[in-house]
Length: 341
Image 1 (tube, one colour):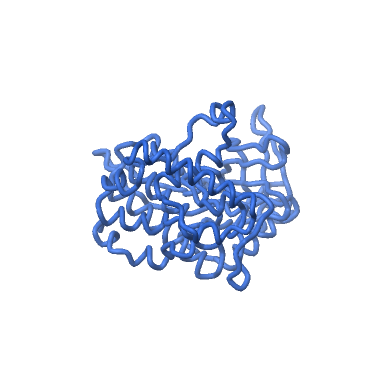
Image 2 (image 1 turned 135 degrees about the vertical axis):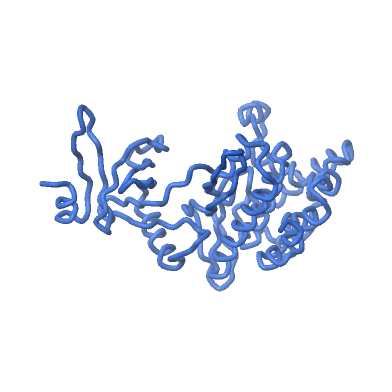
């Protein structure tokens, strides 16, 4: 039976057929489209059923992602709310029986782009940031927060002409594994911090008081990274920190307090857990001592290299008081965008 006929007869499920000496695994989406799984992009260390593959179908590339059932259900909800979004990477097909989501394939992430292309044009970097801001605006306008905004969750395609000029063609904010819809404007309270420690907001490090403002802080860090400030942000040796009894959360908090402090009372009021309040005060004292030793740690000093408008924009996003932090609408209306057109 031809494969396309078999796909029509079996709308869900995994198929396999031989090509030469290889066994090729395929997934049939809800649409009836067949995706031929190829390169393994990521495999979950605890459960090999939760894997990510690059797949081909009709001469186009896709990502096939096996996910836990709760995330599958969350993705269906997100897909319904943000169908047709240009800046949010939603699944375009699925397989309910096996909890599989199929996404468009992007050639790179912002993290790897900046790491591997130090000369990437500044105007193209600004273009990326603008589209990420528009993605966040889409989420926030419907009361969703991403919670894990970081360079490796920003997906990109670009072209390169014969003269080596690079042009970004597609930008999308992806990976909504821990996204949450805030009910009635209430802050998210979790028993533990979620998201990546290096890119979390200060209140996000505590797991309490997480709001839309927490996404804005993370996006401010992404802006710093994209505009060339990666060395100020990245923790490169977690193991060395652990050997000295320092957690990544402690190191990140102290670093952010050094850059964007002093720590305001508004942050402490946002955090309800008394143990975390003490931890924040301790990190604040360590940061102030570091700044006394080296005043150049403040973003007001080294951020000047980004230019006055960029520094002003990012200062608003990285305000340590969540209630005083710039909103996404204020970000998008900032005069820096006109400066970079």
